[in-house]
Length: 631
Image 1 (cartoon, helix red, strand yellow):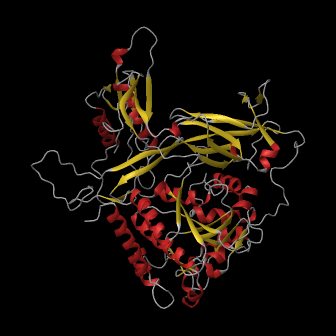
Image 2 (cartoon, helix red, strand yellow):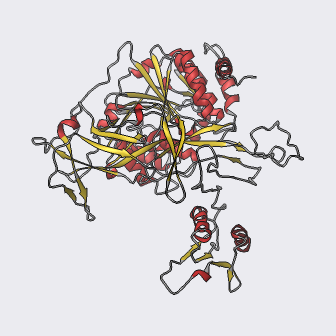
Image 3 (cartoon, one colour):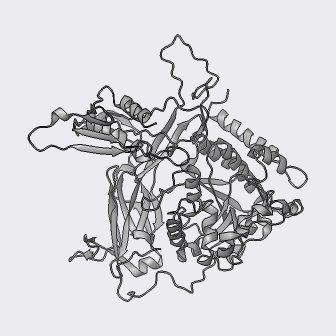
């Protein structure tokens, strides 16, 4: 097996391959470039069955072929590989210094993909980049290649063997939607992060870019010179004029979306933080000591300039005003309550990935809007949504009378990441609720994409959570045949919960004011960071985490009627259900669409799932016709 791996690597490096002493696992290049003067030599030891080797291989080619540095590579595969092969992904590194916006674009090409697996596509980009999918025909979450059709976008296309220019590919394009300012914030009076401090970022009055409808396109050449085009082009970035966020406890981290230009960073006006703190200039010494500039004056804002694509982090130092040396940012006995009004908007959060779940998500949105007596605004996490869904969902929202806005957040590098896409989605569902939405959103209801709503979400919106930051529905226990699959009834979970219920995460309501005030986001991230060190923990991340944290962060148990799932709830309780969730059944497998058609039908429903699906399909046809894409 080792020889097969090494021969594959040697083929990738051909025609420059050079082995040392006949050892098939030792390669050396550019030895003749060494001379008597100072010389950099690169030596690398690689385990071929690891992800870091996938990532470093393109850099080694640059070192060998472009920098012409002496390079030695030793292949050191593990003698024993436990379980399955440790590599389950294909990796391509994209960097083209000669790329232009409309020609010679940087791209990655995946060929000879297996025909027996369903593949998913992910981008791994620098932390300051907000990269979103801009074009795709195929479902990038369920890419399928087969022997007959390959991986092409048009399976009905019959290739002409006499044409040499026919390439059977699935094309998926990504674009840079925005950039991020991120950094650290510290209270120099206490030498700690002022976690919970609210920050705002606004376009500066000095920013002339936002006032211009066009700009000159420039490109940076390989030699570093700047070339300016004569043609005037429209900006391709999405306008951003205001964003806000909170300072986290861990390293005082904060993150704000922006675009190229001049920006003004402030402590949010009208907040308790603006009464307690003001900004000061200074640095942090290598030993970690806060050093405030001698001539530092009280400041209410800081100017930030987004001038490149490699932001390395901003340092924000704040100091307590005189008389506020020991004042808390949030009062312990503060009991603000989210009040309801007749014209108040019910805010609903959801996320989905893949065309099938996007279809389910639209049906959920339609059922929520139809059954809810208040105005509804959906906040959809956009990182995993297809371009076609984003456009058509906006169109459908206008037709059915709701609002849609897309939100995003970049997973911080200091927080342990997830490699599996599903676990990454689960993480986004629970770990960033305090910073994902604008600070003026005071409450949010999360609804899974595969649910259909029977009741009025206004009732849930106005429900008193009895001082808890969020409310979840406990798992049903009325279906006797699946009680044996409820793992929280025995073992670790039984002893840990100590009589508390285990809740399902398919629907929950969050009092964001209390959630932020009690720093629940920081608590959940700290617990996650601790537990995720063990890859076998948090098997159901979005569900296990809040249930595990119940002793530190109280959960208000919603009435059982707010979530009915056939797997755990008896048929007799279905009539009272306000929402129907299509959760998986541990006794047997069933496709989501087939399950939806079977469960969401009959006299209990004003409209069956198939009728809702037909309405969504009609809106889709109308949208395509309006775009001139319907034949």
